[in-house]
Length: 472
Image (cartoon, rainbow, N blue to C red; front, top):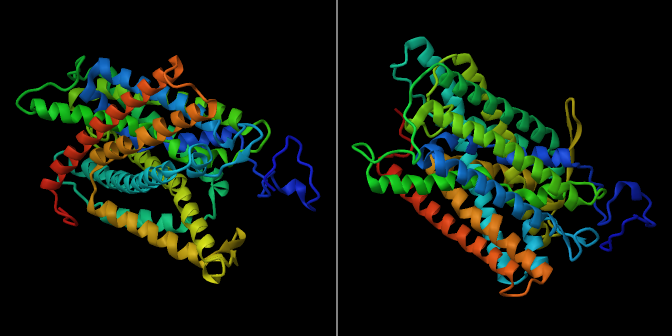
Protein backbone atom coordinates (compact mmCIF):
# COMPACT_ATOMS: atom_id res chain seq x y z
CA UNK A 1 0.00 0.00 0.00
CA UNK A 2 1.80 3.15 -1.25
CA UNK A 3 -0.56 5.91 -0.08
CA UNK A 4 0.90 7.18 3.21
CA UNK A 5 -1.13 8.76 5.94
CA UNK A 6 -0.41 10.43 9.23
CA UNK A 7 -2.79 7.93 10.84
CA UNK A 8 -2.29 4.36 9.67
CA UNK A 9 -5.83 3.06 9.02
CA UNK A 10 -6.15 -0.23 7.17
CA UNK A 11 -8.10 -3.46 7.10
CA UNK A 12 -4.90 -5.47 7.30
CA UNK A 13 -5.22 -8.09 10.07
CA UNK A 14 -1.86 -7.07 11.60
CA UNK A 15 -1.64 -3.29 11.07
CA UNK A 16 0.43 -2.74 14.21
CA UNK A 17 3.27 -4.77 12.71
CA UNK A 18 3.37 -2.93 9.38
CA UNK A 19 4.35 0.54 8.21
CA UNK A 20 2.47 2.62 5.63
CA UNK A 21 4.33 0.86 2.79
CA UNK A 22 3.32 -2.63 3.95
CA UNK A 23 6.82 -3.46 5.25
CA UNK A 24 7.73 -4.58 8.76
CA UNK A 25 7.32 -1.69 11.22
CA UNK A 26 10.49 0.37 11.58
CA UNK A 27 11.65 1.02 15.14
CA UNK A 28 14.75 3.23 14.69
CA UNK A 29 15.19 6.53 16.55
CA UNK A 30 17.50 9.50 16.08
CA UNK A 31 19.82 7.85 18.63
CA UNK A 32 20.20 4.62 16.63
CA UNK A 33 20.60 6.72 13.44
CA UNK A 34 23.33 8.76 15.20
CA UNK A 35 25.08 5.50 16.14
CA UNK A 36 24.93 4.35 12.50
CA UNK A 37 26.34 7.71 11.35
CA UNK A 38 29.13 7.76 13.93
CA UNK A 39 30.00 4.15 13.02
CA UNK A 40 30.14 5.12 9.34
CA UNK A 41 31.98 8.43 9.83
CA UNK A 42 34.45 8.02 12.71
CA UNK A 43 36.24 5.25 10.91
CA UNK A 44 39.74 4.82 9.62
CA UNK A 45 39.64 8.44 8.45
CA UNK A 46 40.34 9.78 11.95
CA UNK A 47 43.65 7.92 12.04
CA UNK A 48 45.09 9.80 9.06
CA UNK A 49 44.04 13.30 10.18
CA UNK A 50 47.29 14.14 12.02
CA UNK A 51 49.14 13.32 8.77
CA UNK A 52 46.65 15.34 6.72
CA UNK A 53 46.99 18.43 8.96
CA UNK A 54 50.79 18.02 8.84
CA UNK A 55 50.60 18.41 5.04
CA UNK A 56 48.29 21.44 5.24
CA UNK A 57 49.56 23.22 8.38
CA UNK A 58 47.88 25.06 11.23
CA UNK A 59 45.97 27.48 8.98
CA UNK A 60 44.62 25.37 6.12
CA UNK A 61 44.27 22.08 8.08
CA UNK A 62 41.56 23.10 10.60
CA UNK A 63 39.93 25.35 7.96
CA UNK A 64 39.55 22.43 5.51
CA UNK A 65 38.18 20.21 8.32
CA UNK A 66 35.54 22.78 9.30
CA UNK A 67 34.61 23.45 5.66
CA UNK A 68 34.01 19.76 4.92
CA UNK A 69 31.98 19.34 8.12
CA UNK A 70 29.70 22.26 7.19
CA UNK A 71 29.23 21.06 3.60
CA UNK A 72 28.50 17.51 4.76
CA UNK A 73 25.88 18.63 7.30
CA UNK A 74 24.24 21.06 4.88
CA UNK A 75 23.90 18.52 2.06
CA UNK A 76 22.79 15.74 4.46
CA UNK A 77 19.81 17.92 5.49
CA UNK A 78 18.91 18.32 1.81
CA UNK A 79 19.19 14.56 1.30
CA UNK A 80 17.05 13.81 4.39
CA UNK A 81 14.15 15.74 2.83
CA UNK A 82 14.38 13.57 -0.30
CA UNK A 83 13.64 10.25 1.48
CA UNK A 84 9.92 10.74 0.81
CA UNK A 85 8.73 12.25 -2.46
CA UNK A 86 7.17 14.47 -3.53
CA UNK A 87 6.32 15.59 0.03
CA UNK A 88 9.15 15.16 2.63
CA UNK A 89 6.67 14.08 5.38
CA UNK A 90 3.74 12.34 3.63
CA UNK A 91 5.25 11.32 0.27
CA UNK A 92 6.14 7.84 -0.99
CA UNK A 93 9.19 6.25 0.64
CA UNK A 94 12.43 5.76 -1.30
CA UNK A 95 14.56 2.97 0.11
CA UNK A 96 17.95 3.66 -1.50
CA UNK A 97 19.99 6.59 -2.78
CA UNK A 98 19.23 5.46 -6.36
CA UNK A 99 15.48 5.42 -5.62
CA UNK A 100 15.72 9.00 -4.32
CA UNK A 101 17.51 10.18 -7.48
CA UNK A 102 15.03 8.27 -9.67
CA UNK A 103 12.04 9.92 -7.92
CA UNK A 104 13.46 13.45 -8.19
CA UNK A 105 15.80 13.65 -11.20
CA UNK A 106 15.30 10.45 -13.25
CA UNK A 107 17.03 9.66 -16.55
CA UNK A 108 20.72 8.80 -16.85
CA UNK A 109 21.47 10.46 -13.51
CA UNK A 110 20.05 7.36 -11.78
CA UNK A 111 22.70 5.16 -13.41
CA UNK A 112 25.44 7.71 -12.66
CA UNK A 113 24.35 7.77 -9.02
CA UNK A 114 24.35 3.97 -8.84
CA UNK A 115 27.87 3.74 -10.28
CA UNK A 116 29.21 6.44 -7.92
CA UNK A 117 27.51 4.98 -4.84
CA UNK A 118 28.33 1.31 -5.30
CA UNK A 119 31.91 1.85 -6.51
CA UNK A 120 32.41 3.99 -3.39
CA UNK A 121 30.84 1.37 -1.10
CA UNK A 122 33.04 -1.37 -2.57
CA UNK A 123 36.08 0.90 -2.17
CA UNK A 124 35.23 1.59 1.48
CA UNK A 125 34.91 -2.12 2.30
CA UNK A 126 38.32 -2.75 0.71
CA UNK A 127 39.79 0.18 2.66
CA UNK A 128 38.37 -1.13 5.94
CA UNK A 129 39.83 -4.60 5.28
CA UNK A 130 43.27 -2.99 4.84
CA UNK A 131 42.92 -0.82 7.96
CA UNK A 132 41.66 -3.63 10.21
CA UNK A 133 44.62 -5.84 9.25
CA UNK A 134 47.07 -2.96 9.84
CA UNK A 135 45.58 -2.49 13.33
CA UNK A 136 45.88 -6.17 14.27
CA UNK A 137 49.45 -6.31 12.89
CA UNK A 138 50.18 -3.20 15.02
CA UNK A 139 49.27 -5.22 18.13
CA UNK A 140 51.90 -7.85 17.22
CA UNK A 141 54.46 -5.17 16.36
CA UNK A 142 53.76 -3.28 19.61
CA UNK A 143 54.43 -6.43 21.65
CA UNK A 144 57.53 -7.19 19.56
CA UNK A 145 58.96 -3.68 20.13
CA UNK A 146 58.16 -3.88 23.84
CA UNK A 147 60.02 -7.15 24.37
CA UNK A 148 62.83 -6.78 21.80
CA UNK A 149 63.50 -3.02 21.79
CA UNK A 150 62.36 -0.19 19.53
CA UNK A 151 65.04 -0.96 16.93
CA UNK A 152 64.00 -4.60 16.50
CA UNK A 153 62.89 -5.86 13.08
CA UNK A 154 59.18 -6.35 13.69
CA UNK A 155 57.38 -6.78 10.35
CA UNK A 156 54.66 -9.48 10.56
CA UNK A 157 52.61 -10.04 7.41
CA UNK A 158 49.18 -8.40 7.03
CA UNK A 159 47.75 -11.19 4.89
CA UNK A 160 46.72 -13.71 7.59
CA UNK A 161 44.84 -10.96 9.42
CA UNK A 162 43.04 -9.85 6.28
CA UNK A 163 41.92 -13.48 5.93
CA UNK A 164 40.71 -13.60 9.57
CA UNK A 165 38.83 -10.31 9.08
CA UNK A 166 37.20 -11.74 5.94
CA UNK A 167 36.06 -14.89 7.80
CA UNK A 168 34.41 -12.75 10.51
CA UNK A 169 32.70 -10.64 7.81
CA UNK A 170 31.43 -13.76 6.02
CA UNK A 171 29.64 -14.76 9.24
CA UNK A 172 28.26 -11.25 9.98
CA UNK A 173 27.22 -10.77 6.34
CA UNK A 174 24.48 -13.34 6.89
CA UNK A 175 22.61 -10.69 8.93
CA UNK A 176 19.67 -10.23 6.52
CA UNK A 177 19.42 -6.42 6.39
CA UNK A 178 20.24 -3.00 7.84
CA UNK A 179 17.35 -3.13 10.33
CA UNK A 180 19.06 -5.95 12.27
CA UNK A 181 22.39 -4.08 12.59
CA UNK A 182 21.64 -1.60 15.40
CA UNK A 183 23.45 -3.62 18.10
CA UNK A 184 26.57 -3.89 15.94
CA UNK A 185 26.55 -0.16 15.13
CA UNK A 186 26.22 0.80 18.80
CA UNK A 187 29.15 -1.51 19.71
CA UNK A 188 31.22 -0.09 16.84
CA UNK A 189 30.41 3.52 17.84
CA UNK A 190 31.59 2.80 21.42
CA UNK A 191 34.83 1.30 20.00
CA UNK A 192 35.41 4.39 17.82
CA UNK A 193 35.11 6.67 20.86
CA UNK A 194 37.47 4.38 22.79
CA UNK A 195 40.35 4.39 20.30
CA UNK A 196 39.89 8.08 19.45
CA UNK A 197 40.12 8.96 23.16
CA UNK A 198 43.18 6.73 23.65
CA UNK A 199 44.93 8.31 20.66
CA UNK A 200 43.96 11.76 21.91
CA UNK A 201 45.18 10.99 25.44
CA UNK A 202 48.53 9.68 24.19
CA UNK A 203 48.97 12.77 22.00
CA UNK A 204 48.19 15.10 24.92
CA UNK A 205 50.65 13.17 27.13
CA UNK A 206 53.34 13.51 24.46
CA UNK A 207 52.76 17.27 24.13
CA UNK A 208 52.62 17.70 27.93
CA UNK A 209 55.84 15.69 28.26
CA UNK A 210 57.74 18.52 26.58
CA UNK A 211 58.67 16.66 23.39
CA UNK A 212 59.64 19.33 20.86
CA UNK A 213 58.32 18.72 17.36
CA UNK A 214 58.38 21.12 14.44
CA UNK A 215 54.98 22.44 13.34
CA UNK A 216 54.37 25.29 10.90
CA UNK A 217 51.51 27.43 9.62
CA UNK A 218 51.83 25.86 6.17
CA UNK A 219 52.66 22.27 7.15
CA UNK A 220 55.51 20.13 5.81
CA UNK A 221 58.37 22.16 4.35
CA UNK A 222 60.12 21.76 1.02
CA UNK A 223 63.72 20.64 1.56
CA UNK A 224 66.20 17.79 1.04
CA UNK A 225 63.56 15.15 1.91
CA UNK A 226 60.55 16.76 0.21
CA UNK A 227 60.47 18.29 -3.27
CA UNK A 228 58.04 21.08 -4.18
CA UNK A 229 56.07 18.73 -6.47
CA UNK A 230 55.79 16.12 -3.68
CA UNK A 231 54.51 18.86 -1.34
CA UNK A 232 51.76 19.72 -3.85
CA UNK A 233 50.78 16.04 -4.36
CA UNK A 234 50.67 15.41 -0.61
CA UNK A 235 48.52 18.51 -0.06
CA UNK A 236 46.03 17.24 -2.64
CA UNK A 237 46.06 13.78 -1.05
CA UNK A 238 45.47 15.28 2.42
CA UNK A 239 42.37 17.07 1.13
CA UNK A 240 41.09 13.70 -0.15
CA UNK A 241 41.75 12.07 3.23
CA UNK A 242 39.68 14.75 4.99
CA UNK A 243 36.88 14.40 2.43
CA UNK A 244 36.82 10.63 3.09
CA UNK A 245 36.71 11.25 6.85
CA UNK A 246 33.17 12.72 6.50
CA UNK A 247 31.74 10.21 4.01
CA UNK A 248 28.32 8.93 5.06
CA UNK A 249 26.03 10.26 2.31
CA UNK A 250 26.32 6.88 0.58
CA UNK A 251 24.39 5.19 3.40
CA UNK A 252 22.23 8.10 4.64
CA UNK A 253 19.03 7.01 2.90
CA UNK A 254 19.47 3.41 4.06
CA UNK A 255 19.97 4.68 7.64
CA UNK A 256 16.89 6.90 7.35
CA UNK A 257 14.86 3.91 6.16
CA UNK A 258 15.36 2.32 9.60
CA UNK A 259 13.55 5.21 11.40
CA UNK A 260 9.99 4.97 12.71
CA UNK A 261 7.56 7.32 11.01
CA UNK A 262 6.70 9.48 14.04
CA UNK A 263 8.20 12.04 14.53
CA UNK A 264 8.72 12.53 10.75
CA UNK A 265 11.80 10.70 9.45
CA UNK A 266 13.35 13.81 7.87
CA UNK A 267 13.29 15.71 11.20
CA UNK A 268 14.83 12.77 13.07
CA UNK A 269 17.47 12.31 10.36
CA UNK A 270 18.45 15.98 10.44
CA UNK A 271 18.84 15.75 14.20
CA UNK A 272 20.89 12.56 13.87
CA UNK A 273 23.05 14.19 11.16
CA UNK A 274 23.68 17.21 13.39
CA UNK A 275 24.67 15.01 16.34
CA UNK A 276 26.83 12.80 14.09
CA UNK A 277 28.63 15.64 12.29
CA UNK A 278 29.16 17.73 15.48
CA UNK A 279 30.52 14.71 17.36
CA UNK A 280 32.86 13.70 14.56
CA UNK A 281 34.05 17.27 13.92
CA UNK A 282 34.94 17.66 17.61
CA UNK A 283 36.89 14.38 17.55
CA UNK A 284 38.54 15.23 14.25
CA UNK A 285 39.70 18.67 15.41
CA UNK A 286 41.07 17.23 18.64
CA UNK A 287 42.72 14.14 17.11
CA UNK A 288 44.03 16.00 14.05
CA UNK A 289 45.33 19.12 15.78
CA UNK A 290 46.69 17.52 18.94
CA UNK A 291 48.10 14.66 16.86
CA UNK A 292 49.92 17.24 14.72
CA UNK A 293 51.16 19.05 17.83
CA UNK A 294 52.50 15.72 19.16
CA UNK A 295 54.21 14.50 15.97
CA UNK A 296 54.82 17.69 14.03
CA UNK A 297 55.61 17.57 10.33
CA UNK A 298 56.73 13.93 10.70
CA UNK A 299 53.24 12.73 11.67
CA UNK A 300 52.73 9.10 10.54
CA UNK A 301 50.02 8.15 8.02
CA UNK A 302 48.11 6.32 10.75
CA UNK A 303 48.81 7.85 14.15
CA UNK A 304 48.09 4.71 16.20
CA UNK A 305 49.73 2.12 13.94
CA UNK A 306 52.53 4.40 12.65
CA UNK A 307 54.42 4.07 15.94
CA UNK A 308 54.67 7.61 17.04
CA UNK A 309 53.89 5.84 20.34
CA UNK A 310 55.61 2.74 21.75
CA UNK A 311 54.52 2.82 25.39
CA UNK A 312 52.39 1.97 27.27
CA UNK A 313 52.26 -0.93 24.82
CA UNK A 314 49.17 -2.50 26.41
CA UNK A 315 47.15 0.71 25.90
CA UNK A 316 48.20 0.90 22.25
CA UNK A 317 47.15 -2.77 21.91
CA UNK A 318 43.70 -1.96 23.34
CA UNK A 319 43.32 0.99 20.95
CA UNK A 320 44.21 -1.11 17.93
CA UNK A 321 41.86 -3.91 18.99
CA UNK A 322 39.10 -1.28 19.33
CA UNK A 323 39.87 -0.10 15.77
CA UNK A 324 39.54 -3.66 14.46
CA UNK A 325 36.24 -4.24 16.30
CA UNK A 326 34.90 -0.89 15.07
CA UNK A 327 35.83 -1.68 11.48
CA UNK A 328 34.06 -5.04 11.72
CA UNK A 329 30.83 -3.09 12.37
CA UNK A 330 31.60 -0.29 9.90
CA UNK A 331 32.22 -2.82 7.11
CA UNK A 332 28.68 -4.13 7.59
CA UNK A 333 27.15 -0.63 7.56
CA UNK A 334 28.75 0.01 4.15
CA UNK A 335 28.26 -3.42 2.55
CA UNK A 336 24.58 -3.95 3.47
CA UNK A 337 23.36 -1.51 0.75
CA UNK A 338 25.42 -3.47 -1.82
CA UNK A 339 23.93 -6.76 -0.65
CA UNK A 340 20.40 -5.35 -0.69
CA UNK A 341 20.79 -3.91 -4.19
CA UNK A 342 22.13 -7.11 -5.78
CA UNK A 343 19.62 -9.37 -4.02
CA UNK A 344 16.67 -7.16 -4.99
CA UNK A 345 17.77 -7.14 -8.66
CA UNK A 346 18.24 -10.92 -8.69
CA UNK A 347 14.79 -11.54 -7.16
CA UNK A 348 13.24 -9.30 -9.83
CA UNK A 349 15.19 -11.06 -12.60
CA UNK A 350 14.58 -14.65 -11.44
CA UNK A 351 11.43 -14.60 -9.25
CA UNK A 352 10.81 -18.35 -9.74
CA UNK A 353 14.27 -19.45 -8.58
CA UNK A 354 14.08 -21.27 -5.25
CA UNK A 355 17.85 -20.87 -4.85
CA UNK A 356 17.36 -17.08 -4.77
CA UNK A 357 14.01 -16.72 -3.00
CA UNK A 358 13.67 -19.60 -0.50
CA UNK A 359 14.45 -18.91 3.17
CA UNK A 360 15.45 -21.85 5.37
CA UNK A 361 14.94 -21.68 9.14
CA UNK A 362 18.09 -22.90 10.90
CA UNK A 363 18.34 -23.38 14.67
CA UNK A 364 21.33 -21.42 15.98
CA UNK A 365 22.38 -22.15 19.60
CA UNK A 366 21.46 -19.26 21.95
CA UNK A 367 19.81 -17.34 19.07
CA UNK A 368 16.82 -19.52 18.17
CA UNK A 369 15.69 -19.85 14.57
CA UNK A 370 17.64 -17.87 11.98
CA UNK A 371 16.67 -17.34 8.31
CA UNK A 372 19.29 -18.68 5.88
CA UNK A 373 19.06 -18.10 2.13
CA UNK A 374 21.43 -20.09 -0.11
CA UNK A 375 21.91 -17.31 -2.66
CA UNK A 376 22.61 -14.82 0.14
CA UNK A 377 25.14 -17.22 1.65
CA UNK A 378 27.01 -17.85 -1.63
CA UNK A 379 26.92 -14.29 -3.03
CA UNK A 380 27.85 -12.50 0.20
CA UNK A 381 30.67 -14.96 0.89
CA UNK A 382 32.02 -14.39 -2.63
CA UNK A 383 31.83 -10.60 -2.21
CA UNK A 384 33.75 -10.61 1.10
CA UNK A 385 36.39 -12.96 -0.34
CA UNK A 386 36.85 -10.73 -3.41
CA UNK A 387 37.27 -7.52 -1.36
CA UNK A 388 39.81 -9.29 0.86
CA UNK A 389 41.77 -10.42 -2.23
CA UNK A 390 41.83 -6.89 -3.67
CA UNK A 391 42.95 -5.55 -0.27
CA UNK A 392 45.84 -8.04 -0.29
CA UNK A 393 46.94 -6.89 -3.74
CA UNK A 394 46.70 -3.13 -3.01
CA UNK A 395 47.42 -2.56 0.71
CA UNK A 396 48.13 1.19 0.44
CA UNK A 397 46.40 3.01 3.26
CA UNK A 398 46.59 6.80 2.76
CA UNK A 399 46.52 6.94 -1.05
CA UNK A 400 43.57 4.53 -1.15
CA UNK A 401 41.63 6.54 1.44
CA UNK A 402 42.23 9.77 -0.44
CA UNK A 403 41.11 8.30 -3.76
CA UNK A 404 37.85 6.92 -2.29
CA UNK A 405 37.12 10.24 -0.59
CA UNK A 406 37.78 12.28 -3.71
CA UNK A 407 35.78 9.96 -5.99
CA UNK A 408 32.67 9.90 -3.79
CA UNK A 409 32.64 13.32 -2.17
CA UNK A 410 31.56 15.40 -5.17
CA UNK A 411 28.79 13.26 -6.73
CA UNK A 412 27.24 11.77 -3.58
CA UNK A 413 27.80 14.40 -0.89
CA UNK A 414 27.43 17.52 -3.03
CA UNK A 415 26.11 17.17 -6.61
CA UNK A 416 23.04 14.94 -6.21
CA UNK A 417 21.70 16.45 -2.94
CA UNK A 418 21.98 19.98 -4.38
CA UNK A 419 20.53 19.08 -7.80
CA UNK A 420 17.59 17.29 -6.13
CA UNK A 421 16.96 20.30 -3.86
CA UNK A 422 16.98 22.68 -6.86
CA UNK A 423 14.53 20.41 -8.74
CA UNK A 424 12.25 19.84 -5.73
CA UNK A 425 12.13 23.49 -4.62
CA UNK A 426 11.83 24.67 -8.26
CA UNK A 427 14.57 27.28 -7.75
CA UNK A 428 14.72 29.64 -10.79
CA UNK A 429 17.90 29.58 -12.88
CA UNK A 430 20.30 32.47 -12.16
CA UNK A 431 18.50 33.45 -8.95
CA UNK A 432 20.75 34.25 -5.95
CA UNK A 433 20.14 30.81 -4.33
CA UNK A 434 20.74 28.98 -7.63
CA UNK A 435 24.02 30.85 -8.22
CA UNK A 436 25.54 30.20 -4.79
CA UNK A 437 24.50 26.54 -4.87
CA UNK A 438 26.19 26.18 -8.28
CA UNK A 439 29.33 27.94 -6.99
CA UNK A 440 29.43 25.45 -4.09
CA UNK A 441 28.93 22.54 -6.51
CA UNK A 442 31.73 23.56 -8.89
CA UNK A 443 34.13 24.45 -6.04
CA UNK A 444 33.66 20.97 -4.61
CA UNK A 445 34.21 19.44 -8.08
CA UNK A 446 37.61 21.17 -8.32
CA UNK A 447 38.50 20.02 -4.78
CA UNK A 448 37.54 16.42 -5.66
CA UNK A 449 39.57 16.47 -8.88
CA UNK A 450 42.78 17.76 -7.27
CA UNK A 451 42.40 15.31 -4.37
CA UNK A 452 41.90 12.43 -6.83
CA UNK A 453 44.99 13.45 -8.81
CA UNK A 454 47.06 13.60 -5.61
CA UNK A 455 45.86 10.18 -4.50
CA UNK A 456 46.49 8.56 -7.89
CA UNK A 457 50.02 9.97 -7.86
CA UNK A 458 50.51 8.51 -4.36
CA UNK A 459 49.24 5.11 -5.50
CA UNK A 460 51.57 5.13 -8.53
CA UNK A 461 54.53 5.97 -6.26
CA UNK A 462 53.61 3.07 -3.95
CA UNK A 463 53.17 0.66 -6.87
CA UNK A 464 56.71 1.34 -8.15
CA UNK A 465 58.24 -0.18 -5.02
CA UNK A 466 55.60 -2.81 -4.18
CA UNK A 467 55.58 -6.52 -4.96
CA UNK A 468 52.19 -8.21 -4.36
CA UNK A 469 52.06 -10.99 -1.74
CA UNK A 470 55.70 -10.52 -0.79
CA UNK A 471 56.30 -10.69 2.96
CA UNK A 472 59.39 -9.46 4.73
